[in-house]
Image (cartoon, rainbow, N blue to C red; front, side):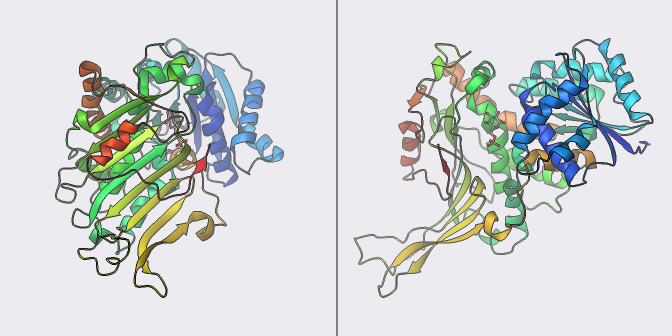
Length: 487
Ligand code: BG6
């Protein structure tokens, strides 16, 4: 029986890194302001670099100022920062863990819950997990013990399976929270609300009415200072294996019987396991023009910074419906959107006489994940005083509908859910393996057969011509239905 404790300690391994400053601490600070953190809590940063508590807090304050949206106030920060501590330690050294445990206990005073956050280099995940286990720091006799594991979870199917084994040798799956911050985005969660809190979409959400679905996750930033990591990873591991396929799963799953972690993740695993093996000819890989000159990138690197692909889901709902997905760095704008294109009406009664157009444009539902958060429905209306139609837009934007609410950062939702023990928005072990088994054959195929060739695209563009050709083969075009931020 797991003990209930009234103190919670959040331990961030890899605390000197970017994520802590940019995302984790601002999220915890916001949760604190909203009074959503437990009354008694500690946040302890752990990494090798030595810091005093005060120096660590100062470093974090700068992050909170910059990244807490509008909520930073010196007085509030001072209060929050009193809960923040630092302990220098080497995660790979088993003997360091006794000292860590003692430091946590000193703060906790009595039995406590602990949330471990793995935000180190992924090469340290295994050692950290094993060392936590060996030091008895995962036992739940004084309070719960949970672990959040940052992406990337493995680099391919085999390594993900291995990491799952290591994790399961120490933690029960119910203690494990594999994070994908896209699932914490309000607008990604809203895909489920759109589909299952309404009656009007679901009856047409299938092969009988949907012609194709496009998922675009474009970024205007380049690889920046992350060349060493990125050149090993590439866009398929960095974005598709997790964020894009999670969006796909949300769009494509069958209705779960509830949104609890088990029911929801069962459905996701089911739909992901129906994804047909991707044909290499249905893939495009590309680099932005000067990627190879970036710091820590090999001069002859073949790592793609952009990919596009077509996939199919072999089940009753989606048979024959192509899903086109693309993502890249150094593109024309930052935008994440899902575009559901419906079939055309069977008969064109209206536009026939106008400019020889033989068909009425299809209806399109655009789900705007960011930055223009909302949903747009494009449909046809009669042009006044003319016997023809024009496409018009029915628009829902978060800004207009929910102006009084600030959209929270994804990490806020996810950190809170982990503390509440709700794993619905985290990736289960079988799910992560399923995700890898979709991208693995593409990664291996690209490497072994060297097809398709690595294309190039100009910075600030929408990707290579080859990606347009991929859709042109099926008489389609990449299209965007949401506004975006030009770079
Ligand atoms: C991360 C990737 O998971 O997601 C980054 O490692 C990418 O390369 C980032 O920039 C994109 O996240 P967002 O929330 O800015 O769309």
